[in-house]
Length: 137
Image 1 (cartoon, rainbow, N blue to C red):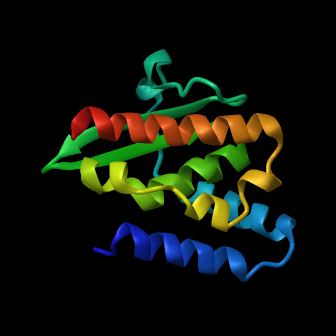
Image 2 (image 1 turned 120 degrees about the vertical axis):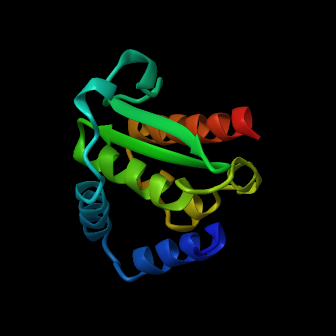
């Protein structure tokens, strides 16, 4: 399994292939399409990430000392963002997640190219993933 840093570096490299942000949004949308189906019965209030303009469900479970995430959103860009985060952090130990600085988000320019409400949602997704990891360290 690749390290978090290796996966983040791949994401940075993938984003750098596109010069226009419209192309980067398309890449995010494609990532969202690759999320595994999220069970309808898991779309509960306690799984909703607070602070997102759109609805984002995040479910986490521990297995063999690793956190596994499943997620979905009712908005295509947001679905791509949560898919991006899951691709990095699902299957990691809580300690690995807590130790990461999430700086790849800045390096790909995501925050400065999202609307303020989407940035708030991104921050809420990151905080939820980090808090879930901290609770399981």
